[in-house]
Length: 250
Image 1: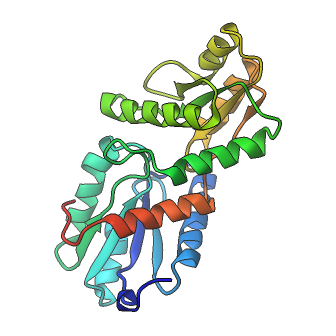
Image 2 (image 1 turned 90 degrees about the vertical axis):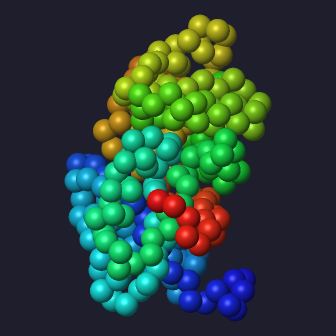
């Protein structure tokens, strides 16, 4: 139960990357509904950096026009790469000074720590895809050229492997090797017979489709669905909201 003095919480604005694939926007809207259901009375509004309207600056301006003086913006990103470092601060600046905006950490590892909720969501999706168990896992991510962001994906893979008690290797759908098929093949060549792929994606789309195709051709026994609107992900969003200090920098 929330303390009584926190009844006037600021609106929460979720900011997704955006995709030409309509499944991406649908997943973001579903997550917004899940977060709102978990925090009754707090407006939770989706927005996108590209391809889908509204953008975060427009949502923030609308909130200011409606009389809100504060908002919390949550980047629906799994790494703190270009979009967190450049696009989101630019969107906040574009919104102007009429509303005080606090920006949370991304949903991936913050300060090097992999949140237990993120791990639980990945494990749930894997169990849904292959309830019979596996002897190795590939963590398939979108990909980035940012070495620090790739390092954070590696930390998630290490934590997931430790949680499951099996080897876990990283693959990328773009920007960096190896691809999902190569990662699956390497694990099979090392002796694994039941290799599954954990989808380090927040929403379905072309990247996840490509991962599924590559991994299945390489002999993966299962490819998990993206995290989308899992309760674990909604909990993680709210954990990020609650952790951001008043007046935190963009």
